[in-house]
Length: 234
Image (tube, rainbow, N blue to C red):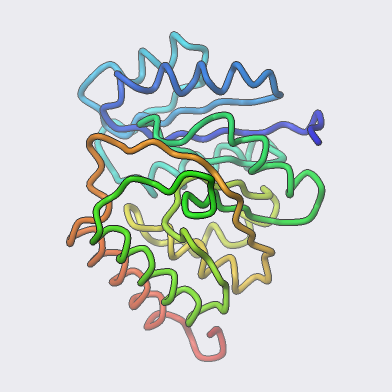
């Protein structure tokens, strides 16, 4: 079920000149009412030019501020432009554009407010290191303890949001780089309906996700959100 509702596709990108063009072309091949916006987060290559040549709207941070700083800028742009549904995906090509229809469909049918593309519910399990796999499972369990949500892929960057609900908790998001878990926690506090959708994915050649530093900062994010919550918010 598709509709004429505008769908804003938001892509934070850092030094992705080799991949961003294919991602945008894949989205355009879907023949949907998509507004594709790429935020070049301080790249030192031709990411912005490649995105512009493929027909995307391009916004730039002159210096690298972090993935979630980029996403928050993109969220604000979409809210100002009255985007009906917001979709986020990575610029490195690991997220298949073909999955977009399945991700937005529950929102169009008003069955969900946020959907998360789960690599672990898809037909083919993702290729990743064993420590990255168990790290994701660990954070899934922490998310369940904090929110009660049963998730399989809480760190996935392939998500869809209902814009008017995102605007309610966007001001609460403080992280600039490691905001995936923070966003889920804040959304759950607003009674948002969150569901996972099976997706396929390709391994990213240069990802740093799953490393010790990445895992530490995700854990720090969760702990800082607990400590900063005023009484009665938990």
